[in-house]
Length: 446
Image 1 (cartoon, rainbow, N blue to C red):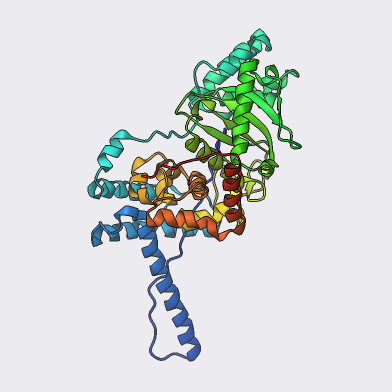
Image 2 (cartoon, one colour; image 1 turned 60 degrees about the horizontal axis):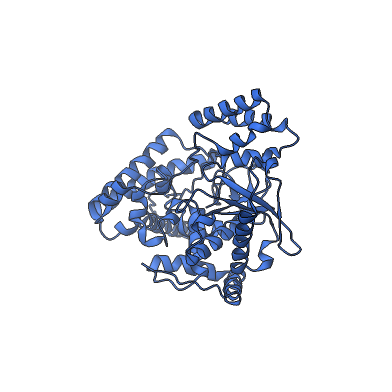
């Protein structure tokens, strides 16, 4: 899980230009014939692209729907693509209401086909998904409670009020006012406290600086970060967690990691996350929940998954809106609310290959379980379907950690990473490091 605290809506659109009908006159020059042949070639290519896009959107429905149903999807795609093409020419990144209505209509139609043709889809819809988007902040925030001894009575009451207002309305102005209060206190690390307050759905327990010379940990002042002091027993337990991380990832993989944290929401919640520590993604931290470590296989998958977020989202792979106020969303490269991927980045290549044609369907309702149902055979886990960056991370973890009894589409995704020699080498180095440390895992396939 890649943790993000503030969301900026950045719409990305990928439009395919559809040519109109071409009529070739009888009496034409050779140059005109050549030009018209090129037009026919483009038309054939665009027709093929549209059919491919329809197949990608239908997923597991592709061979089940009728010709009329397929034509309905094709017609909706054409209308959406034409509207997106107009926006692209005008450099307008936010969809019009007409376009959004068509996308919603297309998604609803696909949902109906999914319920009609895929056995178990209705039960899946009733069951829902266990993956919620957005932060679920608790009413009683432990970090704020810890600040009672540091803040003045007036500031303590203000920050509690602002926090509850933010929980209710999610307005950024409340966050800014909270942060301004924290900045007044020199004894606090305002940034660390602020992040810990917003991460209260997975309460922070302890934070450590990583010594790059030997990867040892230095305990950070808990009161400065809004935390309570760890006991010797906790300290020993949490340093053991770090040792297990190093049993999986080779030592030189941590060159851009400056912090290691322990946080916990109990068993079966969030297992881990990574977070960039600066605006451009040069430095990172890793956070682990020790409550979810009992299963060594799941823990190894989680560690590799989180590392792949860093791998695909560091400053050499993407550009962050927070670091460059002039940066604009891209029509051509992977874009989310935080970043625009570089053209030759791992994530952009993955997006173009597997997500560009299904992005509109996903974005219509990012919590739609039926989106996963109609594409179940394309994702290695259900969580991978929650967004492109998570799909990349989940697939990379399975690529690294063993053989996979995969469908054809899953296999295509897993083998995607083999085109990069450095990633093939990374897989080998991780496995060798685990073998050296006697860290054995057994993947369960289904």
